[in-house]
Length: 421
Ligand SMILES: [Zn+2]
Image 1 (tube, helix red, strand yellow):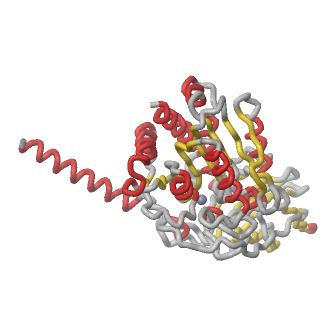
Image 2 (cartoon, protein in one colour):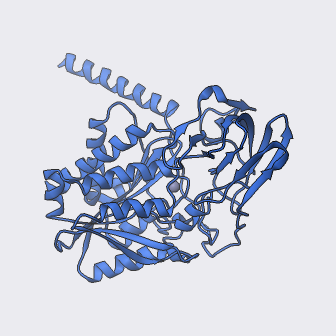
Image 3 (cartoon, rainbow, N blue to C red):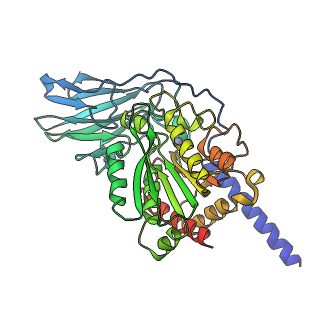
C-alpha cells in the first residue's frame, strides 16, 4: 500500500514536470478570437508584372498565381531590396511572398527581404519549375537584426538576405510551396477520375473564382465527414496534411473502402481562392479574415459553404465529423472543450489520443476552446449550427514535409477506425 502511494506520488511529480516542460517549450496557441466586423473593407490590389533592370540584365516577376512582390530596388553590386506588403491592415503577421528572378548572364545576386510592419516569418523555398521546391541552402541565408523573442514572430528576424544563383531559367523564391487554384483544381480533378469521386462548384468567390467542392460518395449514406482548408492563403502546410488525409480516405485500402461504404465525404480544399491566387497574407478580396465570418456570413466564400451544409441537412444528411486545416508556428489541435461539447466530442479527443500514440516522434499541443459563441470560426459554426464534432487541425510552418504527409495519413486511418467502430 505504502509502495503504491509512493509510486503514485512519483507519477504525479513526473506528470507535473512533464506538463511544466510543455508549458515552457511548447506552443500554447492563440487566445480567444476577438469579435470583429466582417463587412468588406478596401484591399490594395497588387501591381503585377516584370521589374526590368536592363543595365544589370536582371528581371523580377510576380506575375503568376500566388505571386507577391510589391517593389524592388537595385542597390548596386548585384544587391537588391525586395518589399513585401499586405493586402490591407490590420493583418496577421504572415508575410507571404512569391516571385521569380532571372538573367541572361548567370550570376549570383543578393536579395534583402523587407516587410511592411512584419518580420521574416517564412524560410525561403526555391524552385525552377514552380512545382518542386526545396528550402534555400542555409549557406545562402543571412539573418539581419534577429528577433529578441523565443517563439513566434518576435523570434523571427526583421530582415534576411538571400544569395541566389540566377540564370536564364527563372528561379522561384517563395514563402512556402505554391498551390494556387489551378494546381489545386488539377489535384481534385486527378482524384475525380475515380468513379466514386466528383467535384463541382458550390459558389463563387468575390472575384468570381470557383468555390470547388469534392464529393466522395459511393451511394447515399446520409452520414458525412466535412473537410475544409486554406481559409488563410499562406497556410500551405495545413493544406499538405489535408491533401494526404483526403488521399488516404479516398484510397484503395480495405479500410477506406469500408469507410466509403458507410460515409460520404465532402471537401472544400481551397476556401479562399482569391486570397491564394492574389498572394494575400491572410484575407479574401473583401479584406476579411474568412475565419471570423462564420457568424455573420458577409463574405461569399463562407456563405457558399453555409448554404451547402444547410442544403445537405435538408436532404437528410448528418455530419458526423468536421476538420478545418490550418498552419501556425507549430503543430496544435484546437478542439471544443469537453465541458462544452460533452460526449459528442469523444470522437475528437479519442482521435487526438490515437494519432498521438502512433506519432510519438513529434509533440502536438492541444488547446480546447470554451468559447463557441458568437460562432465566428468554422469549427464553432459546424458544431453549434450542425451538431458536428469539429476541430481546427494546425500544422507548423516548418513541420517536415514527409511528416506532414505521414500525419495526414495516420489521422485519416485513425478517424476511419473510430467511425467504423
Ligand atoms: Zn489559419
